[in-house]
Image (tube, rainbow, N blue to C red; front, side, top):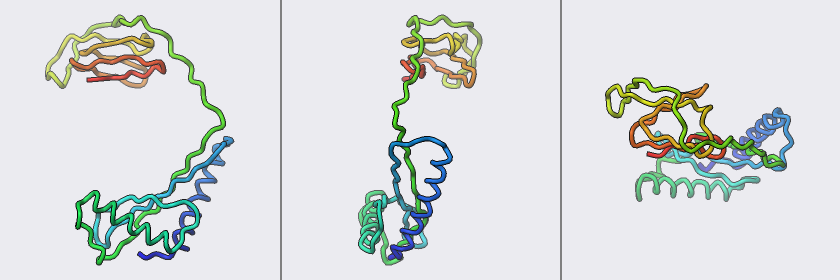
Length: 185
């Protein structure tokens, strides 16, 4: 710092062009595309980098000065008042750009089927639960048998085609309207 604003603009322009290409390759019509800019900044010769938002649009010399000040404020928030060392110099290490493509429709997710509220396990078997550090007779539920509102209390195991969920004693799980297994402890 101070870095040439033209260099900052050119870097973000290249990133934006790349992300525009990536979004176009998805072959979707977006109603809006938003770009979110960040820079990872640090004091020279330090390892601790701090992410700082970068304003959209063309960056001016004044914007570069504000970016530097924003870094120093965030650095002090994270590491404590007076912890910064501006005499060492300030470096931008990483330029980051996120693209968010908004679709013109709101997807409708299919409703998950209703449950009975008290599902019946398919089996019971000995399961080693790390929390209690012993084998324990445990009910085994199959995820595809569950429906909205079904509640399970641990210890229990829920088996699905893609994963297995172990619920130790004191854990509770409820199936929500989208079929998610919401777990509380």
